[in-house]
Length: 166
Image (cartoon, rainbow, N blue to C red; front, side, top):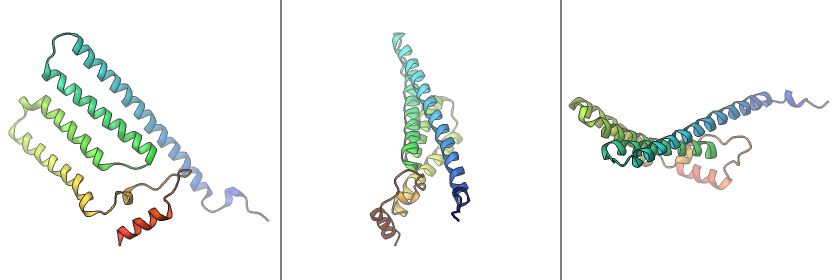
């Protein structure tokens, strides 16, 4: 007698996993659309500022940096949706741009202890950026497992990863 499909080992787990992955993709896609909308609003604000005629560089620079942060976050979401991996180096770069923006906006009001804290944060980010590049051989080893329906790594890629681990 043939076993029913839903009684096979792991069938329910795979189906539930697929449903959760679908919800996750939906949440990430909605977040990406909201980031795109915020980017459009930020660009509109920049154009409104430029059309006023009075160009104040100290007011305009943080707005441009805000747009760059939004673009990087949008790119991170797209990379996650297409490749199903989290790019740590891009997250670190985006964080550095955000810190730079805050420094430009709040520099006149910062105390010396704030600068020590920012220096420490930048040092930690530098470590997070460079340590994986020097101590770990491949970023492919950090990628999340491929989703069902997505192409899996070829034998050559798997052999390359095994060689790099040895």
